[in-house]
Length: 440
Image 1 (cartoon, rainbow, N blue to C red):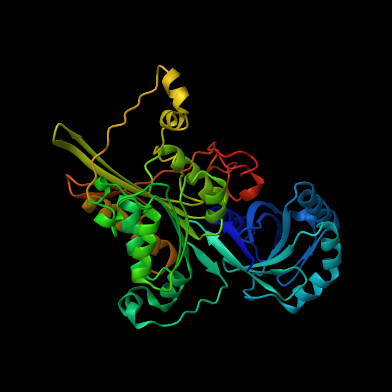
Image 2: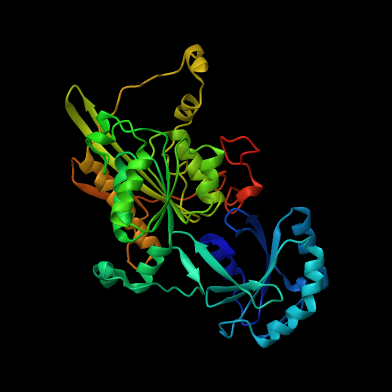
């Protein structure tokens, strides 16, 4: 089913720009992702005084030159187009006047769209209502940011007794949202396996699992769901079996390989959120960009134990949500360009590079620490998608001090990922990092 996705910062700026006692309007450009049938808002053009013929508290008439200009831009850039106007008097739906106005414009807009869908949007009291232009067919609108808001969507789900205690915490709507989510987990090791278990118990029924590794003897101290008989099997298989033991009607799709591949990228484009449970800086950089480019909120999880000759010097963890309005992993100083360069080297390049630091010692790992950070991340998801009043979106854990700190940062204005001229909403119109153009 078609859906329009808009970043919260884009919508917030739009609301501020259109605040008025009279109807105001704007044109939105959208990139269509055919794999998910999502239309990603990429750019907004607010109509100025010269772009409208007339405006009142109940009606707006756009100037022909404005419509010609914005539809030409959509056509030249191969993007879809939406015409938005406000309802300042608070009428919470399309009005009979809207129906009549669209009827006079539908042939013009369809004729200039070269077969791409056109949409009409009404902004009322901070909420967006959408439909195909000139039609009654409604289109769902999802606002993506630190909070995921389903504008005008009817949320309904079957009441199940097994989730009664959760419904008491975040309501039937919250449980219905969880049941309808499609969640990806990248990395099914220590943190990823715990995350999969918790999400399955919460009632998530659709999963995408991505990991190319098999279970080893040294994984058995922390990979939830694995036993001695699991050694040599794919981690995604072990995780899928665990999920099905908890929810026998769960739907699990898997990719046994790198997340930086055509197959994995295609799967990720169809999900509602991603848990990043991989240690690789290159894969985390890829997923950080992916979250903003496709407007898919993601949760990065990491644990670090600094031990030398049996002496533990530091035990820390972090979880950070990635979405429009929140800083990416680059702005959060969580990525190393040098590490990414090393990870992407071929064996021959590593051998020839005098500056390459192999650093291949296995790092310590303890299940209780992984579980702590996975729990913080899953609780963060509840705060983002349901009515649970969890405000944290970036947390740092110090196990030695027993403290969890809230962190904050702003997106750099020149950031190529989460900045205003970065990747937000670009979708398939922009190549994915670290992938060949034909893959992206």
